[in-house]
Length: 333
Image 1 (cartoon, helix red, strand yellow):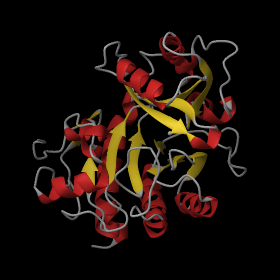
Image 2 (image 1 turned 30 degrees about the vertical axis):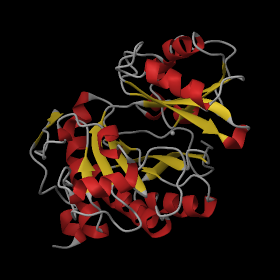
Image 3 (image 1 turned 135 degrees about the vertical axis):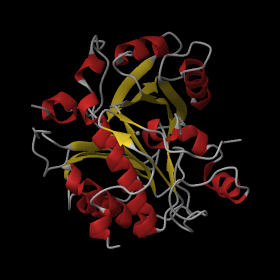
Image 4 (image 1 turned 90 degrees about the vertical axis):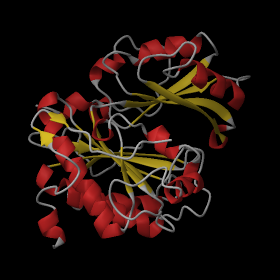
């Protein structure tokens, strides 16, 4: 079957209802600069968001090539690259008919240009094109997002030879952290031991590009807080462990790690994903972290729902934030 034919509808991965995702059966398991070409307001009508992350945050030539490839079939809303995380997050929007093709084009460029056999920074990862979430901004889009995620998973596997792992609602709630645990080498061993089996594609890692995670989800917020001296990496890690969901003072739907930013004078950072920003505004996270260490600056990676900014503390720098570009509702009718 041709690529064009495959991009019409998913053939695998379980049924998807108009209002929700059905988990695909699977084996039991043992974080920008504005783009000059992006309009200030883009209307999302009969479209879907996608937020592919790649394991490259330093080479502008590589990132430009990947961004241009994503832009071949989608509109690029935002790109955020970080040299310490060695990671870039692209936010793009497309009609469902062209979204999978756009994601395939960008992923093809990432696979050609990113080699995981070289050090790839501090952010947990298992792939050159590391994670590809399709985002539904409301319940009416959820079924379409799930269908597009399954279709994208299939074409990434078949066209690029990547093993694809589903996560979230499409995988019975399995998290990205469960798959990334131990990194690329450990994932290769877990596949070889049949502890994990890819949902699509070969039962082995791509030699230079690893694997890819694909899911469908509601909007989350990638949110970073920098800690003032004398806080250090150990401080950031302790705070992350304490505040992430399941920690001693865990916040609902919060994923967190501690990172050291060498590019900013070895500043300690708590790097977080806020998975339920409707329940946990960013101001509440700032308050919780500030009880444990002084906070010097904040950063939002990519797009954010307006409600997440409710009660934002005056005087705290939100580094590089552009409301017109980064607030999701500014792109909606």
